[in-house]
Amino acid sequence: MAFTMKYEIVPRYLSGPSQRRPVLALDPCRFMVAHDTGNPGATAASNVAYYERTRNDMSASAHLFVDDREIIECIPFLTGAPEKAYHVVYNVTTDNARYGVDANDAAGAVELCYGGSINLAEAYKRYVWVLAYACYRYGLNPGTDIAGHYMLDPARRTDPMEPLRLLGKTFGDFLQDVEDEYASSVTPDPPDALLSVEDANKLIHFLSASYLAIDDAEGQAEFHRLANELRKASGQPEE
Image 1 (cartoon, rainbow, N blue to C red):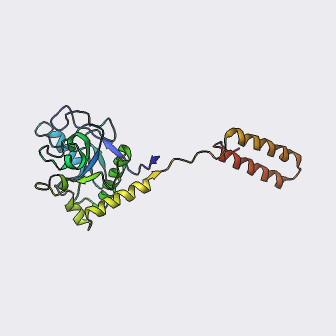
Image 2: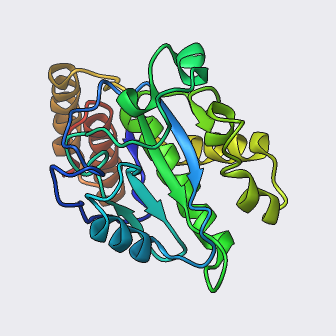
């Protein structure tokens, strides 16, 4: 299967090793965590720039920031070998109960930027798309393998519920949007050839004899069309 790359993911990695980017390999990704920045008006670029300036001041981080113009990856996850990002505190256990692992060790983190001059509807489209793409890349189920940060740390966090509220959406609506994006963006592999090349070419050989036996342009055109249909059915280029 292939995934439609509607948007560019811009790699702009934090310097590391540092507190925000420890340069530690992520375990096989088990789930995704949906965040918002909680900093209305700050763009993806400004958030990443702040993280870089303060990379050794604190450990809190995320893999991707999304606004209405850009999807920026500041810790490798979709554009490089996946690394850990510290986006959920270790002393909560909801992630372990749900997925059997700490989010920091085996989950991707995507931050939605909103407020100020940011067009939230456009930012949301990119947010939904990049989460669908992450599910595709890591073999996750969009309906069950995305958690809101508020679910994992309900005593401290509410994200991403504020931008969802501004959009008039529930978390269930959001998950359905990701599922729909996933379904519309994944292109199935082409079906196996209906005919072997060998059998198709044998039939084409018989058609060629008929093609050469008649002196009728319309009839010859029809034999040529049938030969090309056989080529297509066997995965060969038309002639």
